Image 1 (tube, rainbow, N blue to C red):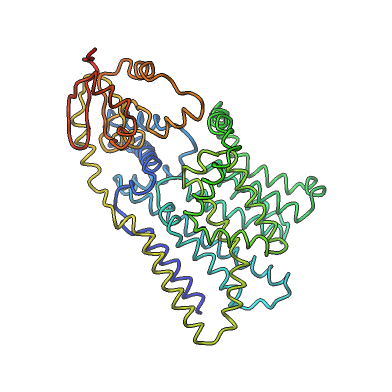
Image 2 (image 1 turned 180 degrees about the vertical axis):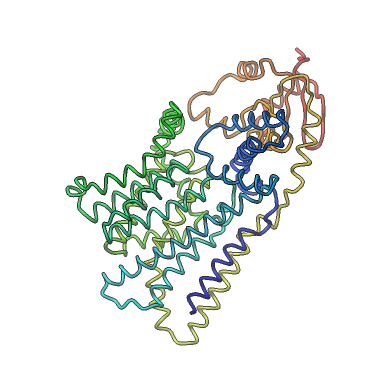
Length: 504
């Protein structure tokens, strides 16, 4: 009974934290990715809606096409179909979907935690008391649901929360298959893994590590390669994504060349690993991360095989995408369930100790736990509480109204121009921001400024500045524009330079 109340409380709290400030604009967490999803969903919605003006529909489709096709628009299509059912765009619908994905993943994680704890206690020849089994599973599920980074990331309009949900489903399927090598678990693990990788291909690294480790534990390497079930599972996991990217010929090779080969020199720099560890420690909690790594060492049997496979897969994943490992926090979202599962052995030890305490110290532990939950909950919603982005649409619509209609525009602006595109219905060429300049330098593509400026602005009539932090970080650009071009429109939030009248 107490476990049921605790589960309802934790899942209810996780749901409430994610739905807090539901209707605010998706600028709170990686707005580039969220607005990209919003633009794609709008394009799909308009293409399906018979009442939309054909001119507007074509413009929305053009904007959608300009975002690129990194993965199949599964979430965006769900959101667009829901727009169609309710009869209008409501961006908060995406938060409902991603929140449900994360909570469903949490339910399956709890179930997997129960099975792994029972296995651990059997290996240790300890009695499987309900307090230990359900308590350990509840601890790791609480971490998964209430980690502040997880709360903020799992409500965002991007495919990652769905990828994590399918990944957890697939891990459960692998674990159950290892317990009972039956075809139903082969099919479920394969289908769930296939959905995770199709949702976002980077799931393949971690799932491959987990699958190889579990298969080798179950059969041994030599026997495993002869198992038809193993090959069917691998086929189900990989086939949907292979078919999708086969239709986008060259995309996978281009991605590998741009993000792995050209940045591989980072792997020999100690600073890369320091930055990677520092970011993960900030996101997950350094003490928790160390406890999770300790959990691998003290786990037993099938549990250790699974955890080692998950962590090795995550490490290899980081080696293939080195730049993202210290610059993009949402690339570590799939680490949350890995750490959660790794905390199981530590949770067992803590709960065994708590179980032996007197009633007074049990009460103290309970009060301390509630205090920690309240503190973590406040940390989770503070970014939404502190910032209000409801004025963003009007602000970008104002900028769009000031842009001249008689020439092409280049811009140093936020989020690859997606704010202007989504809210202001204006598409502009992009001047590289500080991050892209750093990437060009890392890849060895730095060029002389005047030559680059002339090439980049050829045929362009106006230069829009809305990101003044980026503008101040590029003093050569600021000096060049102020020296050679008049200001057409000046406001506290934006500048428009006239590139048609260049002063010598």
